[in-house]
Every structure is written in structure tokens, then in C-alpha cells.
Image (cartoon, rainbow, N blue to C red):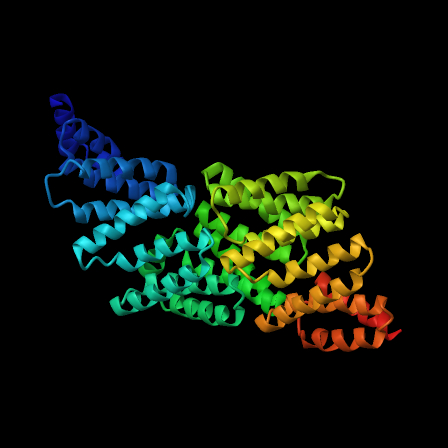
Amino acid sequence: MQLHAAIAGAIEQSFAHLVQAEPETLAYHLTEAGLPEKAAGYWLRAGKIAVARYANIEAIAHLRRGIEAVGGFADGKDRLELDLQFALGPCLYATQGPFSNAYAATSTRARELCERLGDAPEYPQVMQWLTSMHGVRGEMPEALDACMAVVGLAEAAGNRPAAVNAMRGAGLWLLLMGRPVEARRMIERSIAEFDMCDEAERLATRAAGHDAGLAGMAHMGWTLWVLGYPDMARASVGAALQRAEAIGDPHNEAYASHFASVLHAFCREPAVAHTLAERCLALSEEHGFVMRRNLSRVIRGICANQLDPSSDSLATVSSELAEYVGTGYQFLITALYALLSQALLAKQQVMPAREIISKGLAAAEQTSERFFEAELLRLKARALVIEGGFGVSTDAQELLEESLAIAQGQNARSLELRAAADLSRLHRDQGRCADARDLLTPVYAWFTEGFDTQDLKEAKALLDALDA
């Protein structure tokens, strides 16, 4: 211990550049010398330097050493421990995900410290960490309520970064719950507040685990597509990708790439979606982003099969989705089930598709993630049509009418178009061409953009055939 104390003293007195550049060296010797009160601050500094280099694994190691050191304090440790826990949270979110035990423990401990300190400015953002845990495990209404509570808490405290994150979080949960109109308003509010932030406040939003500017644009992309604005949606995720590239943080790049890949999968653009999923996967494997890695594998596998129907990637996707759900994640699960079942039906694999569709509808009921409920019902009807048999036409029509009603009730124009097109095809096959035309014409006519997308091109071809 005396040797380590002597080395620490020498470093402090004679090697100021080492203290600044590699504070973990000094922290290590102070720790070994039995001087935790001095060591903890240097571990915090080392962790922040690692965070600035986007070295999350290294940062986690330094910050945990600091928390261990704080445990050796006699008293007065709460403020410094909160600083350490608050720096640790985003690193754990990026690497282990919001459902991990480590992230939950850090979030819970940070909340305890905030409550003990009484006036900690970190409190609203820490409460926002806890809302994400509700959402990813499928507790959507609870996540939304918690986000709205944090919005009020943050605004009352004058904490704009935390308010921005909570508004954006609320917007995402509203979207996933099948309320895209409200989601758009909330995300627009978040983006507007972010635009008013100064640079320090913008950096502070990254306490959520990612930059609020690009996250808002990514979430807006999904929302705009559901609402029937595919061009605006693609532009929004494109802007998110550009901001991620400008920031240069691997996790922000992986985050933007994931949301963009899913958006292009929604648009039925498998080549673009596959490229973006590959980018997300490469970053996730290199830097240890567990949740992004699993999600990008699913999207990559679905798109790989669409690009090469002879591949066997869908079997792998099914197992990866089962693993994802098995770890407790429910985030985006209904959309992933819909994308997978659509790919299975394209290969005439009706029984596996029906099993996945049933899982998706059960998940929608259980978690309130209903934004792809209409699509799952449409795909259930398509499975019936492919399978054929007595009474199929009637059963499929009932499912498609239910799908259409849900999409209309949600103002989910993109999903309304798909349901209307399939129902029109069914009417055509029943010899009811006038009904088919009357149903699809006003739905198609509503659109003002996205005419290069498969959905709109197929709807236009169907209308042209009905008019012939």
C-alpha cells in the first residue's frame, strides 16, 4: 500500500499530463493505496474520457471501479456516487440494453440517490431511464404514463434535455400503441424543443443513451410512414442517418441505422433495408450493442430472403426472434412478427406464417402494441386465401374488414391502403368489380406522395385493371 501511495503522490506532483490523459492510472494506485476518497473522482474522470471516445466497455469498467471506491467512504458519498451512476447508465443502455439487470440496478440506484439528495438535477432524466424499462418489456400504457409524468417533472424543474427525451419517448409509445396522430404531435413538440437547445443541452440529451435530435427524426420517420407519408418518412430517417454520421458515435449510428432499416422494410424496399441492417449489425458486433445486434439480425434475415427467395434465412430469423422475446424484450415485436409472416407467406409457408401471426396478435393484446394489429389481421386473411377451402372467402372478408376498420380508426393510412387493396382483390375475385373499385379509389386518392412505393404501385395497377 505504501508503494502505491508513493507512486500516486509522484504522479500527482510530477506527471500532470498523465493525470489529465490517463486518470485511471492514478485512480488505480490511489485505490490500491487504500485512498478511496481520492480515487473515486479520478475513476469518474477516466470514465468520462472513455465515454467521450465512445469506448463504452472501458467506461463501464472505470465507473464501476469508482462506485466500488465510493462504497469505502465513511459518509458524504451520495453526490459523487450519483455522478458515477449517471455516467454509467447510458453506457449500459448502449451495450447491455434497457432490459438488462445491470441497467435496471443502475437506474434504481440513481433514483434512490436523487431522492436522498433531494434536489438533484439528474432526477427527471433518471426517471426517464425507468420508463424505457417499462416499454421494452411490453408495458406500453405504463411507459406512456411515466413519460408524461417526467415531462411535467422536467418542465417544472426547467430541465429541457430531460423534457425533450420524455416527449420523444411518449411519442414513440403513442405510435406503438396505435395512436400515430398524437404521436406525431408529441414528437414534433420534442423536435421543436431540441431545436431550441444550446449545444450543452443537446449533449445533455444523450444521457438517454442516444442523441435526442437523431432519435426524434428516426421516430418521426416511422410515424410519418404509418400516417401515409412515405417520402417524408424516408427523408426523416435520412436526416437521422446524416446527423448520426456527423456525430460519429457508433451507438448513435447503430440506432439510426436500425430505425432506418425498419422503415425501409415497412416501405418494402428490402435492398436498402438489408444494407442498413448490415451496417447496424456490424457496429453492434464491434461495440457490443446487444439489443441492436439482435434486432438487426432479424431485419437482415427477412430482407435477405426477399432478395434471394432460395435462401433459408427465415428459419434463422424465427429462432432469433424467439431468443429476443425469450430475454424479455417486447419492443416492436408485433411489427417484426408481421414482417416475418409476410415473408413466409410469400414462400407459401402458410402454417409457420399463421403461427407467427397468432403470436403477433396475442402480443398486441397483451402489450397494447397495436400499431401493426391491422397488418397482422390482413396477413391472417391472406393466409386463409392462400390455403383455400370452403368458406374461406367469407372468413377472409371479415378479417379484412376488421383490419380496414382498425387502420381507419388509427388514421394509419399506409396500413389502410394495404387492407383496402386486399379487400378489393377479394371483391374482384367474387365478381364484385364495382364494389372493389368503389372501396379502393378514395383510399388511393388520399395519397399525395410515395407513388414509387410497392404498395401504391400495386394499388394503382389494381385500379387500372378494374377500370379496363
